[in-house]
Amino acid sequence: MTARRYIRYWTAGSIAALAFVWLLSDILFPFVAGITLAYLLDPLADRLEKWKCPRGLAAALITLLMVVLAAIAALLLVPLLQAQLVDLAGRVPGYIDALREQATALLVLAQERLSDAEMASLREKLKGFAGPDAIAWVGRLLGRLWGGGVALLNLLSLLIITPIVLFYLLRDWDRIVETIDGWLPRREAGIIREQVRAIDEVLSGFIRGQVSVCLLLGVFYAMGLTLVGLDFGLIIGFATGVISFVPYFGMLIGFAVGLGVALAQFGDWQPVAMVAAVFVIGQFLEGNFITPKLVGDRVGLHPVWIIFALLAGGALFGFTGILLAVPVSAVIGVLGRFAILRYKQSGAYGQASASAGDDDPTP
Image (cartoon, rainbow, N blue to C red; front, side, top):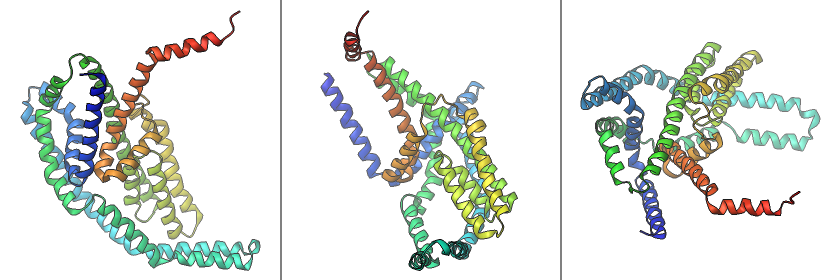
């Protein structure tokens, strides 16, 4: 196969894979979740296998453990979170009115610096963001999120299909890897294996570390906001930790929501400052201790690249795209660095350097 046909072959395969994911993104979510869990839990299955546990039994025990943990979390957390969500939905109009009153009070203080026409315009705009309009906007946003992938059918398929996919992939993981390795072109097999090992190092380091970071941050924010006395501190804090998977962006969303609820709930500035301090301390701990310890700098994924990948994946393929975003970005990053390395080792890069050196005056 010539180089041109080789490139056409892989280009056509990549386009077909993208079209497949785009067309079937609504039903792929439980399968992608099962593949992700199998990838993360394969080292545990390998360890059980080293302890003389048959591979099938190890896969069954791990799958059963994950189902039990999910059931316990659902029984303990879902009722509490559901109650807070219902309560929060009932208090949203009151929070909006309280924020509007505080904003109006601030505008009264600013009357001395604004003309009557400017004050009237600001009041009209403030009234435009009233309860019904804001609730309608939130409803449309939640409707878009629900329609984008968290439908009831997807949730049921996640609970039923994902454990089945997890079990069979864990049981046959080594066999699948061996089969795919047998498909590799023999001349490039060593190079491909080297790049796959680099991708595996990036993915395992980032995903396992980042999941631990999110859980620790969720517990810290939930406990901190609850101790401060913030309404719905548990759900706001835990959700902030979960969406911290998106660097910086997740914390900013949680900070804005928590501060907004604090401003509407408390009449004094001290509790509001304490809520802000919880987020500041959490960000400080994450940036200086938690993330360097659990994730480190060896993964080679820049935060801006991760943010772009997650947002692009979610916009194109819903929650399936969010799950695929980090693996795809890791693959692109590793292959990009490999391409740059090969370019620097090529004659084109060497000729450019030689040409630049010829232009320099010699003593």
